[in-house]
Image (tube, rainbow, N blue to C red; front, side):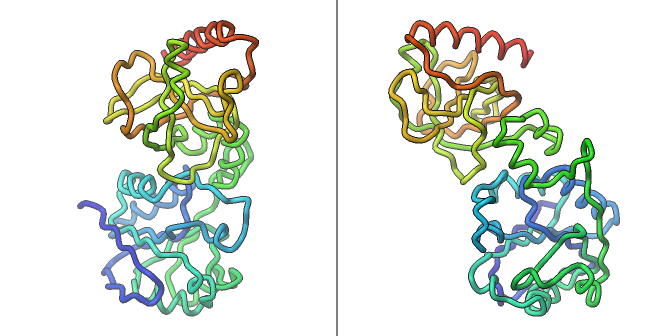
Length: 301
């Protein structure tokens, strides 16, 4: 069965689904903790649904620590379908939802869907001022609470992963996500400085407000029309030539020839290899880029 995406606002009429297990959460990153919760629910043998929001509740409520996300809505949809979700309930998180009480959320959303069972983490909150908790939810539903997944005595959480991305710790990010950190963007015209250095790069106009990695140079992969290429990814302002006012993500695809302008690229971050720096000359920069290329080939072999 192809996953069905149900977009709705608070108060919209929702059709109940018989024998449905509903997983609750924002699910940013769909990391290993989220995957464990969903897979355990899937093993019950019922229809499986996930209820999430179109934007982070914490950000809408003014928490600037979560101004960006690991996964876009389309990323989430792809990942949910991969792990066997049948129904993706995508709720518009707006000012009305912010003011909704815990009982309004239960009555207008959860009871309308009428799940056979609800699955969530021990810290799941809902309703104005996050007044609703798991204990209250259990008054109305059959609720199964899944413990947190841990790695190296650290909780696998979206917040911890975001922090690691901002530190450039991509190997640890991969371990917590269960896959490399991936962003998606359209190639836009740049200054063509890469071509002057015989090192053409694709400047990405991101399709979503992704978490920006630490400034520097990474090795990874780029996907064009589904085809995978080894890549060097620069996050920064390229200070040696035509410095920018704000960081940009540029992707150099190894062993690729052709025009990328206007094309969509997925870029995966595998490993941080060096800080961005200003070189004394273009020749010195060119030599370093050659070293980066050899390092990329060695790491990605």
